[in-house]
Image (cartoon, rainbow, N blue to C red):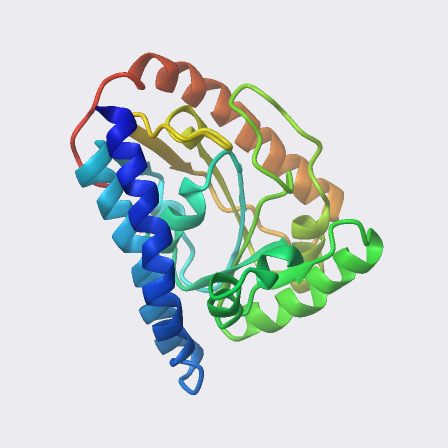
Length: 249
């Protein structure tokens, strides 16, 4: 039955792109805040659908750490789930992502309206400079910037070298860093079809002040906190994954 529910979820997701993306393109003339409010409803709908159809919920702890102004989120990347759910958890935001996503018909065109920082991951220092220059523009406009430092979805229990772009952005601009850990990969795995019922745990860490710190110092603090939190989350989540736990994030 869970395979059937997961198949239905996937079907609704892709059909909804065909319907919603053209509507999203019509928001082009509006300010960013209004565009974001409309386009992010697509993500919010699918988080609701996951809970209703697949029994996959989430719970957030550490909301008290969120700063009042714009910030840089440095988060674990395990699943497609966090790219959807973060739009409900954090204020209006944009993302550092691979530029190939912008080439996807309809989906990529609608995504472009949210001002992502679309980089060539093979461009090295040039990509980092792009993250800093465009990230500064977004942050100064009050838009949060979400960075997945590992650069791609990483299976639970696996660690990958962090890219320096997010930490460099923080050091250059002085905006604070919000480290985030979660165990979504236990429920919606990378390239996985099945959405397992249960409750994804999202933990928001204490703000890391970037002023007066080097990129390496910022990165070390964020990575140590995230990976430390991940060790606990993956142990708890592995035991909890087969069970559905009610309650909204």
